[in-house]
Image (cartoon, rainbow, N blue to C red; front, side, top):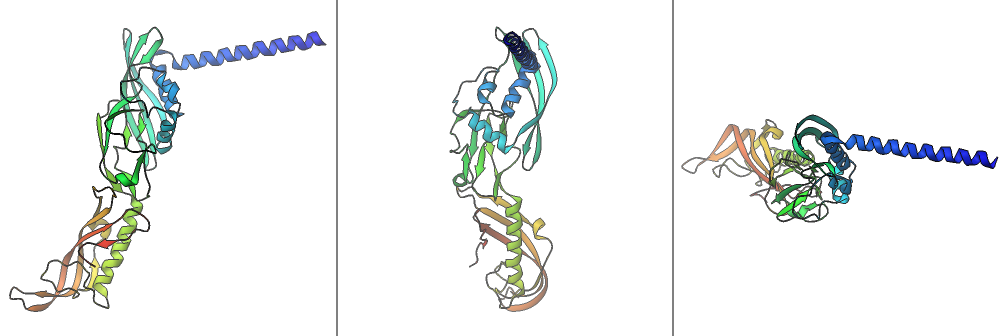
Length: 312
């Protein structure tokens, strides 16, 4: 009985060893060759394994602080890297150019990225010429509302893995302007980021603006805190209704200050009656359609409080 158990144990051990060898071989096969090296690298990025990704090639000179699994996990959370495809491999001696494509799954939708990386065959096998991207990130808007990998935006040149820029805002009303929200091989050496108002912010501010302007022109009581076509129109004299669509007439932008306030600019069509001064400064009642200039702003925090510029 003991001898039988011994041989059963030996057979299981040999099977496990063989299985491990097969698994190791399959792993080697998947990352062998220039195409396998590139595939293995991007697979490591997708599972947020920074040491494994760095092991597929050389690291450019520069600060390595952001080449960690924690930062990589943040990038993958913001936009998972998926659907990697090796498009072609052009070999010339010990060098190869590997063309690839993948998708970044941003919350606003998938974004396809294409590129080519150089792979070199050396003593350690095929290795990528670089495993990180040297870049400078510039963010001049909403700096008090943003974090970069839970810290401040790095100053000067730094190294990052390809993928989403690990930037978050502390408000749902601000977001980076696409497509600059990512870093990639072959991309610009300097990434100047823009900040935009999110659809949620635009929707809420459009509704608030419509409510304020409707109250301005449809009183009672007459409101003097309304935009006027010019200073020749009598404040509080507009009576009628808004025409057109505010969502088309008003454009939203984010200011360049650190607070990142949201600006609303445009003109809104009004139809009704009003009083206006003639060139002789005589007040006359008129009826018709005029356009009201809109200049409004709101801090990008809840609750969005709309302020009509130039009014009380």
